[in-house]
Length: 378
Ligand code: AMP
Ligand code: MG
Image 1 (cartoon, protein in one colour):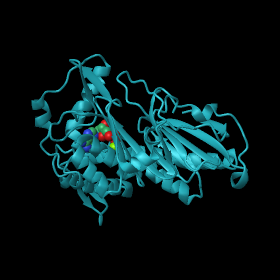
Image 2: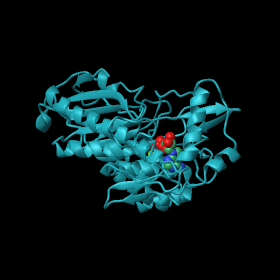
Image 3: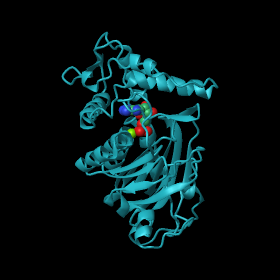
């Protein structure tokens, strides 16, 4: 993969909106150059993009003194995201590596030696299973595999939705409580031969959080990682602004990623979006997206997207998926228990947000200031 390194210096009034829809986002690349002043003098903004982890575009932006310093941080992000991608991969084997595919393949056969990050992730996922009443379920793998295969077939022109019977017959051993984690011996065991893990709903958030923690420990004071809609922030931008401006892309029916639903003003923590427009296929005029309600085994109804704000990106990732599935009152209670904030967009395009989300939201701030301009630039 070719390395692209952009040297960028922002102008204070340019909103470097780091869109969740990064395909569309090129704000930083087009930002014109200016020297940072005052306490931030000598810092410049750089950005690095890669597409080799989690099937998604990972963009890392940071303020550093020079390109060489930025390159060292960018390498940390690429290396850590790549390492965790291989570890959490359920589709591919890598020579000499024990990953989640190894654990899935050994289901019903034997415990498998597991990396600490696999055990940490699965422990978190098991807690989330109980915490969300089973809505968030990494042991839903056998059912998710059916949906995954239908999406792949549809991409090749063979379009059909699975039947309820087919899904039910795959959903025999789908309790995350059955995942056996043995910390003493560092092993993970799936006790039934038909158990399968799929950590797609938390892997990116976990990896982005890990990478951000490493950056902080390595001395980075100001940066932002966006792994396909999982945004983690490290300190304020060093260009005089108090907050970063993080674009939330508007879910659309035609896959157009260029429209923004909102801009969030954030100086720390994480913002994660789950959306029905991310991965889907259409059969019989119905959109079958990738977030599956374990109660029905079909795509969760009612919403287009949920964006969650939380200090920790692993949790924000878990909560965004769970809030997409759960009824609104249960989702609100879950988020409140974790001190998380959120914005929901219904299938009809209506939006609802918690108070903390509203305080960070450009759209909500303008609404309350009475100066919302329809069609105005965000
Ligand atoms: P996210 O975009 O974080 O909401 O995660 C969606 C991904 O999580 C899907 O592509 C599946 O791999 C997986 N997934 C779907 N439904 C569930 C569920 N109910 N619990 C856990 N993971 C799920
Ligand atoms: Mg998620």
